Image (cartoon, rainbow, N blue to C red; front, side, top):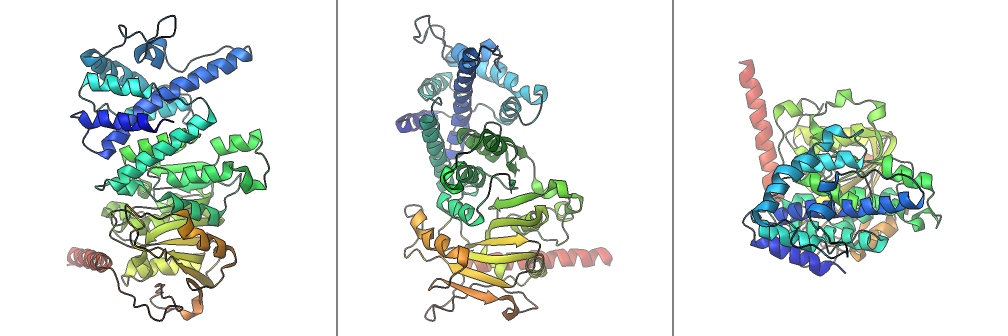
Length: 489
C-alpha cells in the first residue's frame, strides 16, 4: 500500500547533498515518519476523548502540529500550498524552531515512560540533514501520504520500516551491526518462549529487533492457546515488559522508532553504554527474566570499562556475555548470539568465561550458524541458550545446514530454521544435532568447539577471519600483560 511512497522518499533523499548513505536515509525519514505518526495518534486520541465526552489536551502546541506547519489545510480540507512553508523558510523553521521545541520535552515530560519523553529523546539526538528546503518539502508531502490510523496500516508501516533497516544493514559500512536477520530472531524467541509478565532485556538493542519480535510473539493469541489478551496483559506488555540499552545515537533512534511503529507507544530504551555499569553494583531489583541479544563482536573496550568486570578482556562481546549472566534472575533464560571463536579460544579470558558460564548456568543448547548468516560479517556465529542458576550437565548442539551459500541475495529464511525449532524442545539427535555430556569436555580448556559426530566426511576448516581474530585477541592479551609487567618494573 505504501511501498512506493517509501521508495519515492528515498529517491528525494538520494538527491540531497546532506544525505550520503542508507544510514542517512533511515535517520532522516524516521523523524518525518515519527511526526506524522504523532499527528495521527493525536487525532485518534482527540476522537476517543470526544466520543467519551472528555477534554482533550494535545501534546504539541498548535503551531508545531503537523497539520499547521507541515501540511496546512483550507476549510474544505485541501492542502493550502500558499501557506505551506518551503525552501529556506521551511529549513529555518525546522532547524531553529521545531527541533529545539521538541527536544525540550525531554526535560519537561512528567516521567520517562511517556511518549512526551520519547519525543524529547528523539529530537535531542537527531538533527535535520537535508540541505535543500525544496527537497525537504518533497519529503514532507510524501510522508503526508502515509497513514497510521488502522492496525493494517500500522502493520504495513512497521514491515516497510524493517525493510529499510535491512537495506541499511546490507549497505555495509557500520549498518550491518544494526540488523540481525529476523528469521533467526524469531527462532530464538520461539525457543525462549517468553510469557506475559516476564521481563525482557537487551543491553545492545540496535534496531530493537529482538524486542519487537518478542512483542509480536507475546501479542499473538496463538501463542497463548488462542486466549485473547486482557487489558491488564496489554498494559503489562506496553509498560512492564521490555527494556533496552544502546550506546550509539543512530541505533537508539532507529530502535525507538521501530518499537513505536510495532505498537509499543513509549519504548523503555535508554541511551547509554551498558558496559560502563559495574557488575558489582547490580542488585536483584535490576535483573530480568529473559535476555535476548546480538551484542557487537570485534569491538574493543577501554581499560577503565574492563575494570567493571571480574573477567577482564578487551573483546566487547565477552564483556556483554558477563553482563547478561549478571543481569539474569535465578532461573532466567537467555538467547545470545556470539562469534563461534568464543567456544574454542585459548586465551585466559575466554577459558575463564566458558568456565563461569558452564558452572553458573545450564548451557543447554548451542545453535551453530553457517557463514553468511550476517551480511558483511566475516566471522561465523553461534547462539548460546542458557538458564541461570544451575550448572551445565549436557549440551545439545544443532549445526544449521541450509544446503546453500548464504549471502545478501540468498538470505537466511524461516524454513532454514524449522527443523531446529522443531527438535529443540526435546533436544532430539539427528544428522544435524547431537548431545555432549559436560564430563566429556576438557576440564582445563573447557573447549566447546562444534564437532558434528554425524558427519565423518566433513573436515573442520577454520575461516581465515576467525584465525586472524584469535591472533589479534592473543596479541591484545600479550600487550596488556607486557604493560602490566612494565608497570611493576
